[in-house]
Amino acid sequence: MKAVIASEFLKARTVRSHWVLLIIAMAFPLMISTLVGVFNPKPQFMSYRELGSMVTGTGVVSLLLLTSLWVINLTSEFTHGTIRVTYAAVPARWKVIVSKAIVGTAVTSVVMTVLFWSTFGVGAVLLDGRGAPIFVTGWVSHTTGVFVALVALAIIVSWFGLGLGVLIKNSPVAIVVVLLWPLIIENLVALAFVLSGVESARKWMPYQAAIQTVDSNPGLDGTLGRPWAHLYFATFALVILVIGISVDRRRDA
Image 1 (cartoon, one colour):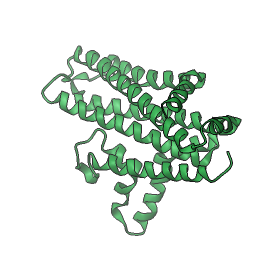
Image 2 (spheres, helix red, strand yellow):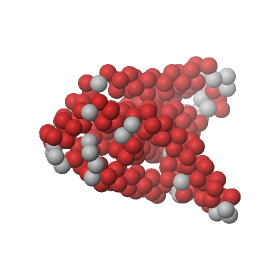
Image 3 (cartoon, rainbow, N blue to C red):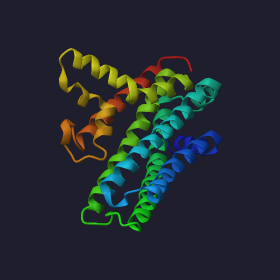
Image 4 (tube, one colour):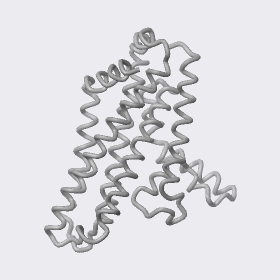
């Protein structure tokens, strides 16, 4: 298993498109944080909570880019036929998929950690220098909670994207589904339930449930709250991944 993980890590770091997505994912939040720190017209109204929400918003965009990276990492092998070589070397196909999930979890954790604290740090220093109430009582516990929730969400989304990639196999289609799932698909499903009289449907949409609790206090505004929303989404993502692995075992590469 260690050899398979090492092989997948090598693939992840030697593909040029992966580095392009990583650079964009890192640069976008830093750019927004710098602009907010320098040009915010009323920095005195920008507390650590608002800064955390801004970092979360840009971080969600970055994690979608990271998810696209892991989808491409898998589906491109199906598209170019290289997955046949991989499966010939590792007949237990589940080991390949699980190894990709492990590598994705590790890389996503590191990238999102660096991304979050660098983005928050740049914004905090710039805004604090302009009189914003950033480094005041409560900022450490609140910001740490947002950080943990965002990184956990990014990891879960990477599993979700990998599961969809295994099921769909086509890079463009899989990426579109991954990107549209939280923006359109879950909203349409929730709307259908709401119109049918199920008013609480929105909070049971797994992706949305996790996103809504990243920068909010646990259990507020009718959300499932931390950590339940993340556990709920993680269960959903792992079910998708397990179904993908099961289907992949029964079909031709």
